[in-house]
Length: 345
Image (cartoon, rainbow, N blue to C red):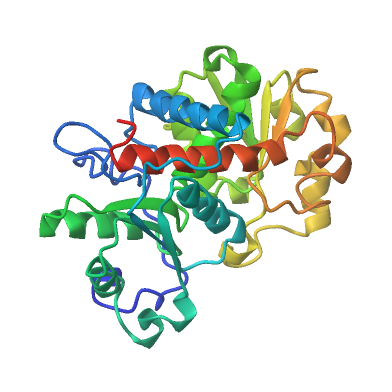
């Protein structure tokens, strides 16, 4: 794998990891007792484990509602945010979450780091581990980078350093998937009675993959994906999703609508005629939203492209829960860190 013998940022457009590659492998996220050692993906995690993370996040939200701004669960621990891709929102929420758990937070400036001078990802990690790091929050443009890091730690026999995947290539974004599940549970209570539609650029979306895995694991009976043929990958039906190319048909009677932005930075070639044409057919307007159930909620992982995948009056409307998603994200990331550190097993 190029990450182990070449600079970590030397290949900006790698091919995605096939979805089935890790299904039959040993789950590198769990320790020998079946507890969470790293959070790399939602695939392979049980319903009980996902529910435990959601319940733990709820306990942190309850503390915050009582104006408890900090808890000492990670006091004396060092959390390194290592972002090889820009993401102000995700990095900031991880930083806030770690600080609320009383951790020391180090944000690594990748552009000025050793990786820009030719050092590999694993060499960089080894050096940071020597600085007594306890947790790495990693975002990388190559699918599988956090897995490589976790396997490296396993080979070295290091069990007290934890990896959290903050997004790897097109593969996975587990904490975004978890906060989306928390949002759905908060507003809809029971997963087993829902129809959920995920709309847009599924092909390039790690969020979509994480959400499909989580929704099916948590018992959602009907997960729909809606998008043009050019933006839908193969294998969706095998994952348990129903595929729609027509927005009106796909949105009929759904309880939850999850919109995705166009991942133009990951697209190779012209996959769409124009943004205006895309909005005409796949942008969420009030008229299209009216096809869903009257109490349907509208979600979006952000950042929003108004007038491209969602109309402003929908994004700002009564059915949108986009801003609460951001708040829930802090609690979810606190929960994951606390569980990994052993405070909430």
